[in-house]
Length: 482
Ligand code: ADP
Image 1: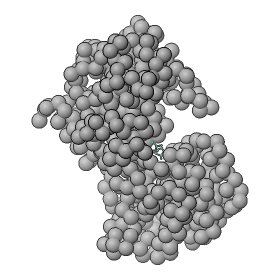
Image 2: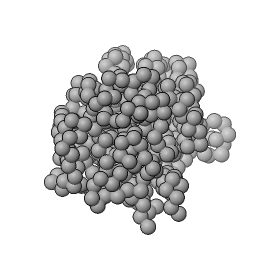
Image 3: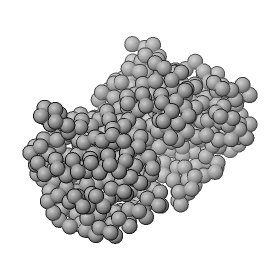
Image 4: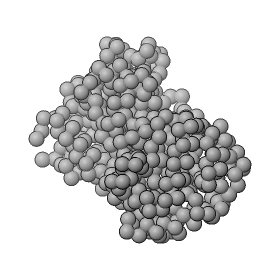
């Protein structure tokens, strides 16, 4: 029997994406289908989403969804069912899902995502004819209020629910003054409800309401129990004890496969990794880098403190000094962007920088780079190191969160056993990163060992098989179906 689950999220690839959340939400329906789960994804009706679903059928309307009219549209993405909240007052805006084109967050994000949560709860509770769900799965703070509305205001408090944390750093924390406009009963403003440090916490409210909590790697699930990673919610996470687990993200082999990737100058497989050379030459040309026989590092990242880009800036002179070259693709913090451009100006031909978001270029860089650097201070799962593994672009990562769980360090024993897939370092600091770069350049100099690390990574399986089953097993355990 098919289990019907409502997956509520603010992003879904390929329709709308700012980061890994979208990739995961986009991949889950296909990952769960083989396990007898039909996932219907509920998304905000941003212009890009409405355009993608075309002429969709309205299956429900709200005259007054927290102060504005809205319609529910039914469509499909990649053959999987989609429900879209068409509410122009909240979502018909230029720019990104959370802010304007200049990157400033919309001031009414609390209102937009409360309305989204309110509608999600209605849908989950069966308000829409022909749409019945056994379980609701909310992703990140933007979807979390759905679980709070289900608990306090939809009479659906008993339906099982999962709250997934893709990044604890984003919590949706607002002042107490927004509470009246949420139209929740007064008792919801309580320590075990939506109240958080005197204000309203969206993610916190979802975590309190959820039957089970997941995050996107076992190590991050452990880390968020500590104050350093829990960012104020570590006490709550500890109190939910055995209800918190980690399921590593997979990657979609249809999009991330070097043997079939149309973005690459030359396609290759684990048997023909030598063909990567053509892709490396293409990246050197594209970033204006000198050709030489040393390793070409790449970085594909949001340019933020979380991602350790400030420490990366500190080691760039060292990287160029030991014979490395670097191509960076990223967008984010203007100071960090400026620092990268300054480093490129200091090291012409050794460091190249492209700011902005470019999906096809990210594929080409993974196909041509020798090593991908991921010096994150914390990383719930991380996807770029998984793409690196699949493409033979050896990941060099800090030992945290999902990076710790998915990369096997090239230490003596792992190299001897032929199982090493990358390099790890402890702590995001100048000495740790500089030493990791030195180790990488030395390993690259031993081409047989390097190729063995590349091949082991390309053979490792990070498709959704295991993780799709882990989600399905969790749903089953919560619904009592066998
Ligand atoms: P996060 O979600 O914290 O940003 P992840 O590693 O989980 O980090 O996911 C980031 C996703 O966004 C990956 O698919 C990565 O390839 C992509 N990405 C990040 N920056 C860029 C960029 N500037 N251009 C293209 N893709 C990018």
